[in-house]
Length: 176
Image 1 (tube, rainbow, N blue to C red):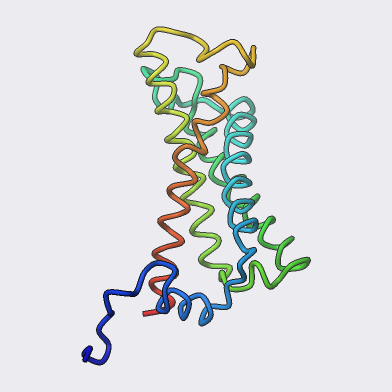
Image 2: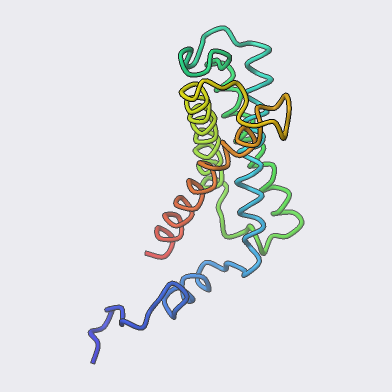
């Protein structure tokens, strides 16, 4: 006979305790589209914000030995625009499909978008470091002028797992 509160060996990530947590938070099965759009809007707009803010106001180099074109002002612009874009996406979902996004608070969404935007910049710097180490300018010729395919996926490569683990932590906090 199991002890009260103990998790039986039959419980899995899709088992009864997971289902209770999902029901308790009101997470709809289709909420994945909201989470992906929240993450990707933060990542993509962080890249765009960093580019435009860096070109407009960039003076101080962020990591000159890794990527001489990136600036502190660009990184700040990327964080602001990425966070704002993610929050705008949450507002759109809250208005149009509240059953998909309502379980994530505005504060949690702001923190997640801010952290994801930061990791998008780290992903971009990591890819620049890899290209510099390999002594190449572009990581492919499929997308000329954009640095190649790797330049398109460098930010989501760190942003998506970061969002995943923050969501796990958020669900854990909300259900404990």
